[in-house]
View 1 (tube, rainbow, N blue to C red):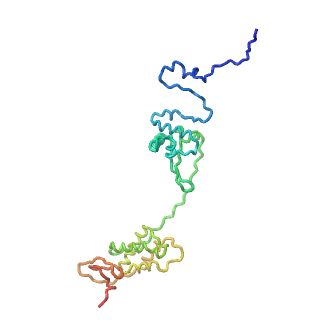
View 2 (cartoon, rainbow, N blue to C red):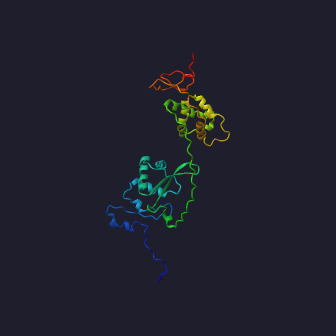
View 3 (cartoon, helix red, strand yellow):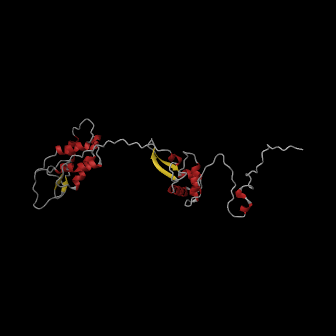
Length: 287
């Protein structure tokens, strides 16, 4: 008569087979729904929330791209060209899918400058929108440091006023602009910005109006410049335009009721008033 082994482990029917799984019972085979065959993952798997996998507004491509990005390790490239090389949909459709993920809070893309000065795109994928940073938000935030008080920037003084011509003719102003723009050829320190030139041009035009030649104006403005660094060359030139302003030319009565236009002398290029182009009174030979 055999003894019964009371310590023997009772055999439990395995649920690894599909015949014992609740989702694979015979009663479910008659319907057209999905039948799941579950295998437990122990490595190489990604946990994806149903809010993404079953999103009601995202396209299938956007959901697939979102699941793929979530499965990648941190630091993996996820640019449009990188994804287009991985999937067959092409850059246009992949770009649209990324915009969908961005619109629904799964993706954040920002442009940042690296220490070397290069602009790069930083991509952050949120596995659960609404909780930026995931579990890190549960940690207490460090107290915000008060930024150091910034020193007020010193206000730059306006340039000194310059003489103004009595009749700012366009040809005089054009000549003045040319003189000022060419000063850096005499001394590279006399480089002027467009704003500086616009401010100084009326003063140079006043000198030309007082019958100085462009060459004479250039020589006076560049004569005996300081040897040290010129911190603000426009201010120095404005001072010279005021300090060395030439006197008014001698009065020459014109015909009553007639004011002739300015002409440039064919010999010295000086501006003077005359009915027609020619030479000024200085260059006109006397008989």
